[in-house]
Image (cartoon, rainbow, N blue to C red; front, side):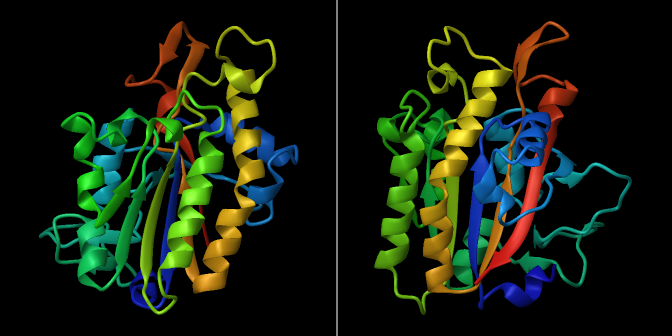
Length: 262
C-alpha cells in the first residue's frame, strides 16, 4: 500500500481494539460472528506488537511503528518520522519531518482527532494527557471508558458527529481507542461473574455490531485509509498468567488489518 501517495488525498481512520487477542479475533471472523469487519477483510493478519501494554504500544504507534508482520523481515512501514539509519522506511512510506506521525499529519493539513477509551487517555491525570496531547483535539469521558458496557455506542456516535461537522475538503486523521474489549468485559455475557476468553469474544461481537455507522460516515467524506488493529493481547490464565504488560504469545501476538474505503 502506497501510503506516501495517500497523504493529502485520503482521510485516515485508525482504530485500536484495545487488548484484543489475535486468536479470538481470528476465530470470531472465521466463524462469521464479526460480519461488519468481515465485510471489509477476509482474514486478520498476524502481527507482533511493539509494546505489551497500551502506553508503550501507542508511543510506538504514534512514532510510526505499527505492529510488525509475524514473518521474517525487514518489513517496510506505512508511516515513519524521519531519522537517520531507518531500515524500514521504503519509497511507499509516508515520511514526516515531525517527532510523531500525528503532528506529521497535522503539518500536512490534517485535522487530528483522538477519541479516548482506556485510562491512558483520561486527562484527569498527567500521564493520561500524554497520548491525547499529540492531537489537535481530544475527547474523553468516563462513559467512553472500560466500565460502561455501551462505551462503543458513544464512541462511534461522537466520531460520526465530528466527521460530519468537518468540511469534506478538510482531511482528517481520526484515532479511536475502543475500550470495550479491555477488562472488565464480563458484562457482555449475561450471568458471567468473571472475565474470560468467552466474555472477551462477546465484547468483540458487540463492538462489531456497532461499527457500521463509523464506516458509513468515513465513506461519505472521502477515500479513507482504514487501519484496524490491537495494541496488545491479554492473558486469561494462559500458562498461569493473567493480564498483560508481560511477555507471552497471547500478549505480543495481535490482529492487524488495513483497507481503503470510498
